[in-house]
Image (cartoon, rainbow, N blue to C red):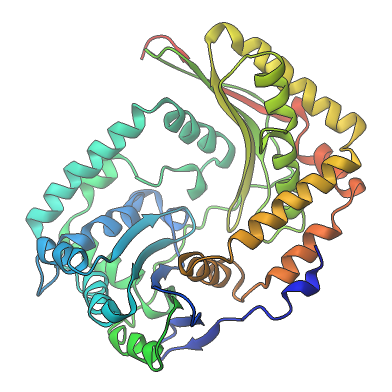
Length: 422
């Protein structure tokens, strides 16, 4: 795939609004919808331990009413025009997104702005939401792979915010009162912390309308980030992490610290994760599931965060199969370290990754999200031709070096959630 193929890719129009918020605009005249997102530059990883879960709590509570609209009126306003609204919190950012037909955009964006900028933060709603989120936390604890992943992340990231659950804990969630949430909201939604991203069938002047609607962004000092140092990627760990619960399957993660979004090895690490366990033809999938029938679910992934990351092979199997699964995974890792990837594997994985990059160009929602994430992670728009060039530059020598640095089976944490007592 020739990077020159994407020379005509449209770069989003970027405007810095008064106060410091950034507005991104991608016009697609042939699109049938408009996608819009309010993105916050901080996620749960930036929270202090005392505020663990507060970003996620605010993501919930803004839907519970404003100074002029009840929660039901907000829901009815979106549903009555067929708007698709979503919100989610990650360790790196918080997002509120909307997809709507062009003729309904003006009214819908006013409702969304009212919701995120002027939440009522009413006492009874806060009390109810504490209960809802504590139920969500309990549900996560009852989900074996979620419980294991949280423990696995804590083992690798230590006291850094990436090692804490996005949801927080019951204790922190119960401590969030109206005063704390109001002050945190004001600083979390401060103008310098906000990215507004707009894509699709945009009539002239629509971006100016968005800027006007969001002129009410707080001019407050953003929340101070946690001061815990980022884990040293070279200080990799080993050993076991074992949880037990009254479950039937054994859930496992085998991995270690990886790289951040700004690390020069991020593309080869992503490629190696895909080569090992990213698809049906990958080494781990073929060895564990297809050749030996040891597991239904097994895959590799690479969590590449804003300031840190991890690599892991994860899945589930019958308890009796766990020792053999570990042996097979370790053997495939050692084979990769010893022999390196084949030329065919390199070509195949480059094609897969480049295809996924191109797929991300399709659809207004993908375009809106991609523009926002580029701003959040890199402070600029990264064109596909540049990404394709980075993928093309990866060779067998680079992959072999990164395999030794990040996928040595003797320097992995072996984490398992096994059947047993709670």
